[in-house]
Amino acid sequence: MEIIRIPRIVQDTCKKYRMKGRSVGFVPTMGALHEGHLSLIRRSRMENDITVVSIFVNPLQFGPSEDLARYPRDVESDSNKISALETDILFLPDDALMYSPAFSTSVEVAGVSEKLCGRFRPGHFRGVATVVAKLFNIVSPTRAYFGQKDYQQTVVIRRMVKDLNFDLEVVICPTIREHDGLAISSRNTYLGPEERIAAAAIHRSLSRGAGAVLQGERSAGRIREMVEEGLAAEKLINRIDYVAAVDLATLDDVEEIGREIVLAAAVRIGKTRLIDNLLVNV
Ligand code: AMP
Image (cartoon, rainbow, N blue to C red; front, side, top):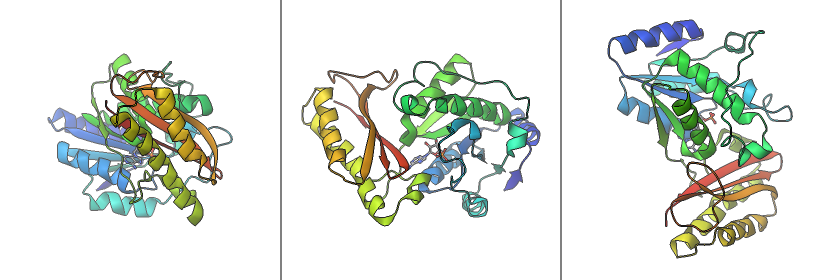
């Protein structure tokens, strides 16, 4: 595995592969790699000749009161995990090479960025879209891999890819979970032992809501209430940012469930903000 820190060198290397007719799969991450990330890398390895993984804790997508400084970082362990999966290139850009002092461009995907998490994290999806656009231009992948766990992010990126004519396929991979259903996340490491147990209530409550839809409940309001009740019953969940039943593409609230929807929630346990979602088909 090659470890490259300079965007220009990744760009030249990937272009050469593409010119030789090789497919390039790309997995962008912020590191602190877990089974969720590794599932994306395995999928890319299966579907492409070359796999590029990036690790970059993107300052643009963190708000001023968010966890940029304490976000978990362990490049050595990450690098071993990626190398064990026979990744071809690990791209580890320095902040300064990604964002020069004169950097002044941003990519704003209006509409879908403002819903759900966008209401609580202003500017977050602008930061995500901007860095992903940069990374796409550096790697020029054939396919790029994202997790369903961050459902809104996948919608924002798909919209950006269509709107800006990026010549690549966005592949969405299923959410990998712990044994009790908790979606694996780098932020789970912030949780104390009791908080960790409490966090399982997120998936449990969403599953109860999804189960009710499968049993014939069609009122999104009633489903949201059921999920909220489940979350509120867990004392260590100290804030519910939202519980939402939304359209797959527009992320607009659904009232009467007549087709596949996303059931999504964001909560706080202590200072840790956790999100999860389920796709529910009628
Ligand atoms: P992050 O490092 O948190 O920015 O995540 C990098 C990629 O891994 C994103 O596309 C995430 O959606 C994806 N990801 C994170 N957690 C999981 C998970 N539990 N299952 C599947 N994909 C995940």
